[in-house]
Structure formats: C-alpha cells, structure tokens
Amino acid sequence: MQYAFAYFTLLAFPFFASYLFRKYSGPAACAIAVLAGSLFLPEEFGFDLPLIPPLGKDNITFLSVLLAILIHRAREFQAARPGRGLEALIYLLILGNIVTFLTNRDVLFDEGRIVEPVVPYWLIAMLGDDILNLGIPFVVGRAMFRSLDDLETLLRIFASIGVIYAGLVLVEFLLSIPFIQWNVVSYFYGIYPIPNIRWGMAQPIVFVAHGLELATIIAPAAIAVAALAKAKRQVTSFRFRLPRATLNAGLVATLNVAGNLYGLSVALLYSMLKPRALIRVALVFSLFALSYPALRALDLFPAEYLIETAEGFDAERARSFAGRLAEEEYVLARSQFDGRLLFGWGGIERLPAEQLGEFDPVGGEEGGLDGWWILEIAQRGLFGMFIIFALLSIPVVVAWSRSGSVGREWALPLIAGLMFVVGIRTIDLLFNGWWNHLPIFFAGALLGAMSSANSKRSEARTQF
Image (cartoon, rainbow, N blue to C red; front, side):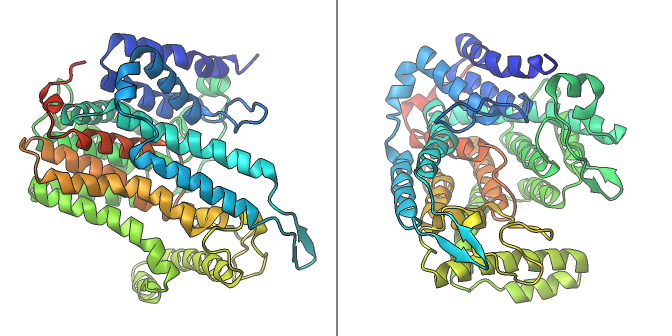
C-alpha cells in the first residue's frame, strides 16, 4: 500500500504522545505533542468513521494528547475541573446549534432550485465538531499549563519547533518547488498541492495545507522568540541571534504580506515598548478582532474610506478588499432580512444564490465566501460566532487584568507574547480560514497559566 506510512504515522501518534508524557513534564510533553502533530502529521489523510466527524491530523493530535493526559496526568487534569469555567461556553454553543437546527427545518425555493432543510445529522456533526475542534483543544491547554513557568515552557518549545519549521520553509523557498512534492515525501505522504504562485515563485507550504496557514505558524513563532528575548529566557544554545534570524528569514520566505506584517511589526514593538505597554497593545489586537463583526453588523465600520485608501497603494488589492466586504455585507443583510442573523442558515449552501456584482454566495466561478467569521455567521449566526470569539478573546482580557498583580517582571513579556499570538490568530479569522486548532489551544493555555499566576505553584520552576 503506497500510503501506508501516512496512515502509520496517524495510528502511531497516540503511542508517541504517551511516550512524551512518560519522559517529560506535563507542560513540556503537551507542547511537543500538540505542535508535532499539528505541524508534521500528513495533511490529506484521516479516518472517516460512521456517526462521528472525520478524524484528520488535528483531531487525532488532540485526542491522542487527551488520552495520554488521562493515562499519565489524570490528577492534574481533574484538578483543572474540565468542563467548567470558560469552556462551559461550549454548552451554550450546543444550545445555539439546536436553535439553528429548529429554525432551519423549512424548504427554501431559490431561483428554480429547491434547498433542502437542515437534517438531524447536521446537529450530530456540529456537536462532534464543537467538542473535537473547540472543547478538547481548549481544555487540554487550560489543564496542562497552570503557571507562568508552564507558559515559558510552551513558548520555548513553540520557538524551537518554529525554528525547525522556518528552516524547512527556507529549503523549499530556495529550491522553488513545494517541499512536500519531493518524490520521497510525496510518495509516502501522498500530498499533491497545487502551488500558489506569488511574485513568480511558488509559495512554500512545508507540511500544511496552504501558504496562508504556514504564515500563521511562523509569525507567532517569531513573536515567541521576541518575547523570550525580552524576558532574557534562552531558546537554544545559540541564544537568540540564530533563532531570530532563521524565523525572520523564514517568515519573509512565506511570501505572505499579512504574516510578515504581524510578525515583524510585533517584533519591532518588543524592541520599542516596555512589557506592560506590550500587554496593553496585545489587548487592543484581541479587542479589535472581537469588535469587528459587531461593527460590520451595525454598519459602523469605515469600509468605503478604507477601500479608497487602499486604492492609493494597490488597486488590485483594493478590488480584492472591496469584494471581501461585499461578501460580508451580502451575508449580513440577507440574514437580517430573512430573520436568520442570530442563529444562521445551517450552512452556506442554504443562502439564496442571488448575484452581488461578481460574488456568488454558494461558490460560483468567481468565488464564494472568504473569511472564517462570515462563514460561521452563515452556518450558525452571530450567537455561535461570538461564543467562539469569546473563547479566544476572554483569556486575553483575563491575562491583561491579572498581569498588573504579577510580581515577576520576567514573566510580563511572555504573557504579552501569548496574548499577541492568540490575538493575531483571532484577527486572521476575520480574513482567512480556521486552518488548525492551535489558536483555541493557545487561548486555553493562556487562561490556565494566568489562573494561578500568583499562586505558590507558579513559583516552582517547570523542568523538562
């Protein structure tokens, strides 16, 4: 079987995670397992079993980590009281899904086509998705990272693995061919992506689905290195010069404008601002992401002004930006008109297929919806979308509110670093896809680390 190795890595990963939890401390094992699975497992493979959502690399990663925790760290996991606290919002999300299902049992007639009602399996699938994609990653992060020293461990491992990944980006960039299309790798992993050409070069992807996803990995890793440098915490035996240079070069090589803007601008902020000022700026990032959907829904966002400004720099990007805003306006206006703004349509395919310029809401030749948040509104409405944004944003607000009483100054740049990582990934959901479960995992880890930031437990150094 040609792709036996791909399936073998997925099946073997639970044993790898268990080995890590036997060898290392809980936080270190969790960080290594989550990042290794999310970044190196095969992208295109998984298991589609009856009555449960398909299990790809992200779900297998977190299910394996959860199983290893229950076997080797059950007491620590129970002490975190899983299912309570902020992750109890998942219960509200499930309730919202039920309302979405009940309000979309009608048959729609749209320009000659019949749109079927939402079926009961949709509700079962959404329940599974919310538990696998949101609940488990969040509670794993919150349960395993319970102190400021645990937070340092997470950022150190993230920075170290990020350096390795950035090295692979540079290899792919210099060879100008997709790294995972090398004969050996593609033969075993079976991944044949269509290269995305930017500025005459193939955009690197390494082992992930898209160049945009790659940028959301390298940019936060570069921020982690900047945070550790500010805190004077060593990343590797090379201290900071080599890791920082490798990550910055890898970030540039992703050929992604937004990723470079996020990573390099935050690194610049770290060189200019004091730790407590960095925390305040990181809070603003997260609050912007949380407020943007509300501003768009209330028609308070200065869309026309920004389009005119963008035209002065790049007409093509201004056109793309205007098209994106048109998509958002269509979904919001149509949902409000049909009374489905709060709980959604149950899926983008149920939206009326009316034309708005070049935009076809069900995905025609000219495109389809882009941006995770507007897809979620089409799926489950403002109610569900804001609950997920709350899971990502409230930990950042909690970190800001508790940072003032943190006595150890070295920890403040690290707190700001993880706040930036979560906030920037939340902003990226306004424009791009979910990609992987790392944002919700980092949010849970931030909340867990800050929940006991001032306790005696946080005084004990976490060792590998």
